[in-house]
Length: 407
Length: 228
Image (cartoon, rainbow over all chains, first blue to last red; front, top):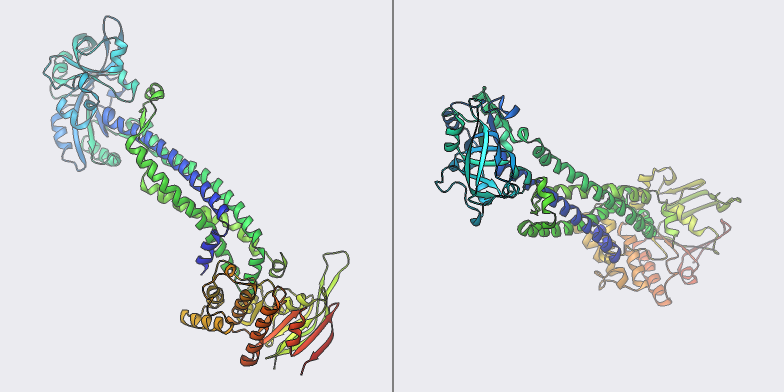
């Protein structure tokens, strides 16, 4: 009966309750929508870095990271890859040669990282090849000797086009400055323009002979997992297996991604707490009005024998149910909008240059885990209970005789 | 056998510069089965006396004993519980719970008393039929006339099987037909089920039906007549 009274009380003043519900609904749609948008942007950035740049785990010679020293290689790579593939949770593994060099054309010189890849295995770990559209060549599908894949961004900077030649200059394994001409066979484009500008891809087989790196030695092993969240524990296993190499998970390789991944949850929590806090104050105000309007009725309830505990429960239920109705509608609308925009994306092409310069895509796909909706519902219940305390306390302090005298 | 025993009861309000003695040394005994009207001009202390008997206000001095229990000594929660099980209230402006139907209003009291659902339903229907509202069981207060609402209030007051019913100006908002119907119902309940009724009223029609009339003036009993 207490539930029934509280529920029906909400609809006694339909206009007021509707206004409160609308306020909660719009607050939640705004809050959840913005959170989903930020979350989508962050997730996309993290995903892009996994898909194009760093995979989930990388292995290097412990001294390689200092200045990409060509001599700091990992040996017996094929044996290591075979052993790594035996570990549970490993999806794919590839090996890379990786050095710093200079890309030159008749117009310009630019510093780049030259990455030598095994195209077949590279495609199992990274999906960079998917960013090359039909008109922009391919990712080493052809047998072109000394082919190179660079980004559209770099091509623009170097003022070259597909099938043009560029010269790469770098230091070989013996410390001698060397170089070779490469023909552009593919132009990729990711959502991180800075990364695009500074990385070029060549075939391991061509590159090794110019570089002079001994057979079966590489600078990097890249590993992708079935579940990227398991990277730290699998990285530890690999580290124990190969103590002479440095195994790093994606959080260690790119702490900014890790920060984004963890911080989004915190940011969303804070964001929603502010919105729900404001909602709480609105509820307190509404419920104080309700108490003021129903003084006589509350006096009657206390007179006929309603205990203070039950009176508190009625007010608490009314507040909580009112906020839950708003939350439910808000979450439903949010869910629909997030699903819709999660499928079609939010196009911010007008800000493309700025966004891509910091690694974010111009088209973002909002996303929000289901657990977030559950958390919001719990937060709404807590806020509802908290918001009912002060009005309920005011009601409990009423003297029934005085309350009954009010008109 | 006395249900209510009031001894030298006073209530003084000190909110103004001059203290107001709303009730000034009243002693009174109400026996089971009485149908008593407390009358007097406005401000004579009727409602204050009723509130103290009902445990809604604390006396400045004196005692209210109900079935031998001195209610002014009960703690706040005990007093609420005592009211729930021992006193039925009928108010001037009906004071039903507006969001509940007639049936739910009556059931509510019994649910607070934690009575079983079967007993609750049976008694509710019986009570509403006894006040002539068998056909309005599922009507909400705003779908009923004032007289009908007050009859629901009577049924609600009786739902808890109280020791007595306190009715403060129960007919003040009713027309003569509704008043007459209501008084007949209460009179019958008094006669047939020996329920004790105590009214505070201005209404001569209530006084005419009363078995005993206590007249107050300036917070004191000036006459106490049993009508034969």
